[in-house]
Image 1 (cartoon, rainbow, N blue to C red):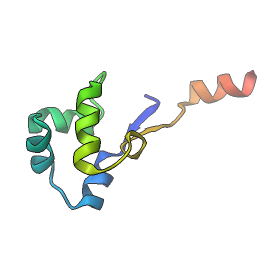
Image 2: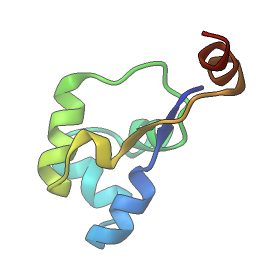
Image 3: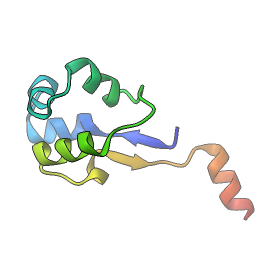
Length: 78
C-alpha cells in the first residue's frame, strides 16, 4: 500500500496513549489500533479531523504517501 500511517510517532511526540486518543475522539481502541496498523481500507474525514484536533497536527503528520515499486516503475517509464 502506498499510504503509510505514522500515527504512532505523533502519539509519542504528544505523549499520549492510544487509549487517551481513542476516548477523546469517540473511537474504540480496537478501531484506532486497526487504523494505526494500516489494516483499514479507509478513514472517515470526521475521524481524521478529530485526530488532528486532539493531536494538534495536520493530516500529513499522520499519513504519508510512499510509492510502491509498481508506482515507481510506472513513473520512471512515463
